[in-house]
Length: 314
Image (cartoon, rainbow, N blue to C red; front, top):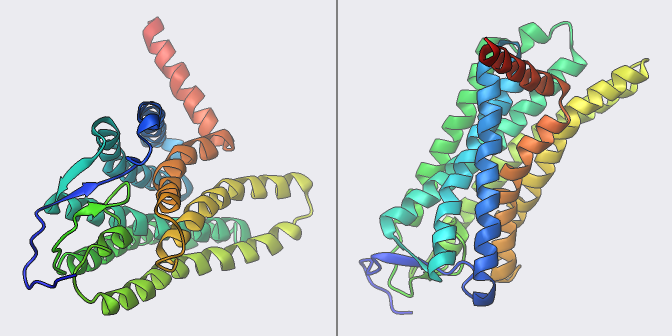
């Protein structure tokens, strides 16, 4: 490919699922329903935790932040993908592509660290229940939340700025559902070797640091649960961790396959499906996972519902 000092590409074309024109209408319908359910489910979690004072504890405030992240990353990716399905191909300016990549990274990294913080919270609650109010006080909680968001902002700023410092001389077709880093980087007409080393190292640090925290926390939690004399206590402790473990498995499994894979590891269509798993499936399932398995959240919903019915009665 001919190299130029200046970028000549002013817009990109997201191919999405244009290879399956016969499925466009069906995919549009399915993704639209999934998107609306995702927004509604996460919005309900956010509103319930905001309104119910009994849920203003770290466990549920972390969950509220997770719902904000899930709803946001879905809103960054899904509308463009729906437009692409309705018009065969979606055109996006370089500024729009920059913004989309930035927010995908911001929310993705933030979710990594939030999941790590949630594991630490469960470790403190189960392994040191008497000291839990001191270990996870309001100040510690705020530091963990702020660290998660600031980490997302820093990684997104550095990585997105570096990617778009490369010249893009054409072609301008991104064979993906969104402007994710690996897909955009394939179009750069410059040597990206140093960036790839940084990206791989940075991804390992960003992903592995919270993952190791999660792993160590759950090893300690497992031993603590096994030492519990009461079967009811063991079941309750396991129940509070099961939802979080399911979210971790869904998010980390697919995200790692996308960002830590060799360039030729998977076909473009497989990469799109894996991207959908953590950008669409995880935000959709998290509200269901946490609400269906959590009795306190269910009670809060019923309490707010009864309060609403009583107001209408009078």
